[in-house]
Amino acid sequence: MARPVIGISAYSEQARWAAWDTQATLLPQAYVDRVAASGGLPVLLPSVPDVAEAADRFDALIIAGGGDIDPARYRSEAHERTGFVRPARDTAELSLAQRAFDRRIPVLGICRGLQVLNILRGGTLIQHLPDRLGGDERHAPAPGRYGRHRVHLVAGSRTAQVYGRTEFEVATHHHQAVDTLGDGLVVTGRAPDGIVEAIEVPGHPFAVAVQWHPEVDDDLAPFTALVKAARSRAAGAPLPT
Image (cartoon, rainbow, N blue to C red; front, side):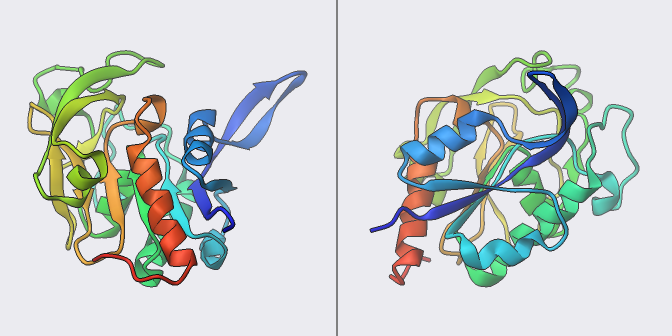
């Protein structure tokens, strides 16, 4: 059986390589490697208009991590620490997520991807966690460096089923997080400080999002679960709800 195609939302950023310094569509290699190692065929989805039309050509979707979402998308004024806002990416990922919900395409949100799903469903974000946590920056300890903390998952949730356990340590780098939860979403994981770390969509074949960065850890569980759901969808087999 052909490997299922996994679409991954990509960045449009200024980048340097060889003799070049120009705008590029890019994505950290770890996402691609984890999908390939899990049996999927990774395909990058650029931040272009109508990219959601590609939904009929992939079997599952990953909404990747990245910069902050425009606070206007959730009816808020921008915090002074909100940054790296890319309106074209916001539009592309929100449309991709909506198409995944409409077509019941398996979807995995990672870091920013969790926030995209929350905003799509009408939720809001804490724009700078140290403000809420009294200056604590454990969720993003330094630029370009991941922190680590434990998460606790709700027993019996899809997220806990994916990982096969309810408590473990994760790699983290985010300064924003869920504030008001979006309609139809449920919280399935939290950090010890209470910050939302996992959400899912009940009734959807596979719609799971985590605030941490599983692509930089060795555990392939969320990627293998997504690929399994994608393979079932591609084969026309019924998926669990």
